[in-house]
Image 1: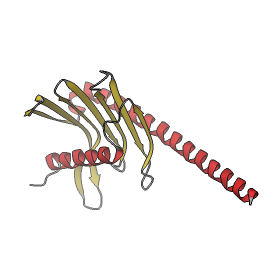
Image 2 (image 1 turned 90 degrees about the vertical axis):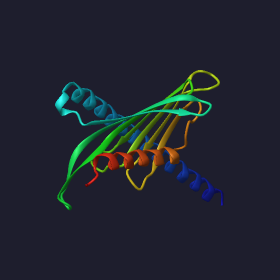
Image 3 (image 1 turned 90 degrees about the horizontal axis):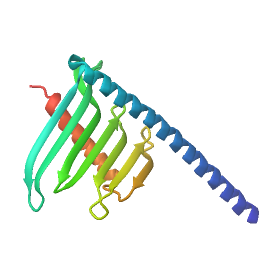
Length: 182
């Protein structure tokens, strides 16, 4: 019986190490993709004709908070779908910044350029009590892996389920704005 328990413990430890190794590899891969994406955006921003960027600005009053300004930026590619024979725009990076009263928030959503799947979310915001910045990072694997790693500095501003839902909502809003067929 003792040997079985020892064997099972060893098996579970090896499985956990393999999982940690896969997560570390995926985080490294996503960071590489993120850096390449940021470099690409910086390069095309220099060429006015090469930019594929959509910016949505919102200014509105929020009760008990005052004037709120929200800016959502979409960076996208033009893609051709062979099955339908149609060109469409596909976001690969979305940023969102907004305020709630004096507190400022910033969010980034990175998508795989080939599949359109969400692979990374970065959330940053002013901490109400300490005045420091809270930061949360979520890394997703290839489907059906789901979330493979998270990093939280300070307080978590939203969980990975809500972050994923927000990313999907932002993507849907983009498609309604850019890919409508009239």
